[in-house]
Length: 303
View (tube, helix red, strand yellow):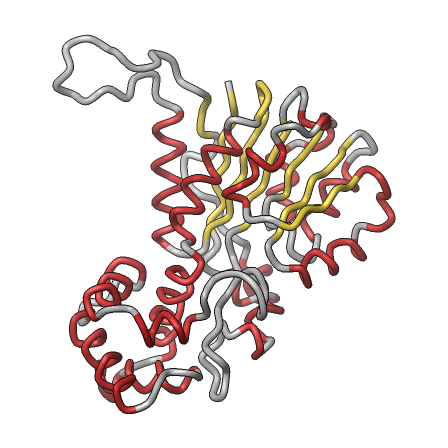
């Protein structure tokens, strides 16, 4: 959704833009190409992604700064950056994992046979404990919470119990171990989307993604200048729900509980939501990139 992002962030106005999930640099390049007055800060946890972005954006020279960090730390990381003295003109958070991460077995995001259970956004050798450690050490209660809340799995209790039973026989290490637990729980009707949903739930837990999103949203909002815009592309309902709720709350003048007779909150809206409904990728884009089919784009503007 590069064209939609560029259209809504309006980089032709110039200023400093933040790509909080720079990845390979596709969106960043489009923003930089839109106007010579655009400067861009790109963030990513994955060192390989940053190397790819550096190569992709090399032609823009000192108009680009790249930093290795999670967007949840964007506000504190950039607090003293002179580029941001007047605030961000726009920011993008593309919450999907890259096709490269999915396709590379070492990253451990796929449920293809033989894939190690890693799932760390920060790369394969650094950062949080890998998925295998989580599956082998978490309590049955904690596993159930992960499958229920992050995977929206109705048979979460049975699946958690099965993971605990199987790891007692042999520690989880590869994708097939978790696939086996899902198959044993859901039976012969288990489909690829079921495996994808459960693997996604584990990935969310490994990377603490939903808490990071909530922190990142508010931190980046606070860096926007008046008229600055925040665009977020989400890929599953849990992410989109958080983004939708945040944008709605920021756009309200009063957020007091209904039972309070007098407003005691900020009393003014922080800005306004520009997308009443999320934008979706075109049929042509989905045909060229089927992984984009679940993408939802929402945009908010700071008052």
